[in-house]
Length: 234
Image 1: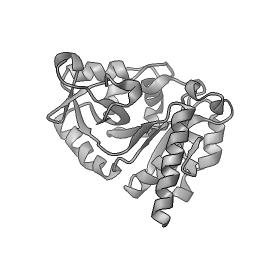
Image 2: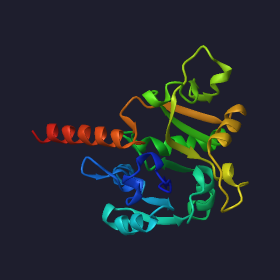
Image 3: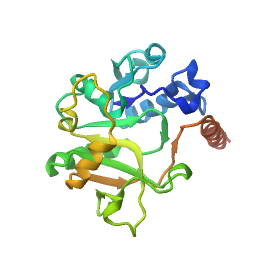
Image 4: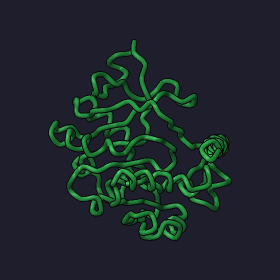
């Protein structure tokens, strides 16, 4: 599932007329970078949620055929926040663990790792697996600690540095089953509850990751990707 329902308030005025995941960097929409990477990893059954200007997303991406994917849409009408949006899409996601990717990030994470992570999730009985990254300037305190491939609360070990949640994770459907369909619900409280129960695994990604949350970050990412592409073409 790719999350694409957010309003993108910090991206205004760009997002007044274009949904955030369709904003371009390096010559293509942010969400297309995700779709292409997922397809290259063999993950082709995709669900995309939307709300703000959602019709543009469906028009731009279609049924996914041109990417080698099958795309289905979860139209929330009004954005339901992360956990609420996932819960709303559960009928499309099925009964097995699924991956979720924030549509407004850029990351070179290798999605081919996910099948093995899913198997480990099923065998362990964990409820979630999170990909963590180094802290960006706008989140220097981080979100969670990673210790022996387990995600723990920073409050349990304040002497260690926390990492930032990348927006890429694996989840058991049961994590969202208690959320009434159509209600708003954030993800962080669910994760913290499961972390306290010792039910969340994690991994560290040391590659490129950008939370494309402001026009300035979008511009910087665009310049970086274009420079990288120019180098490849030399």
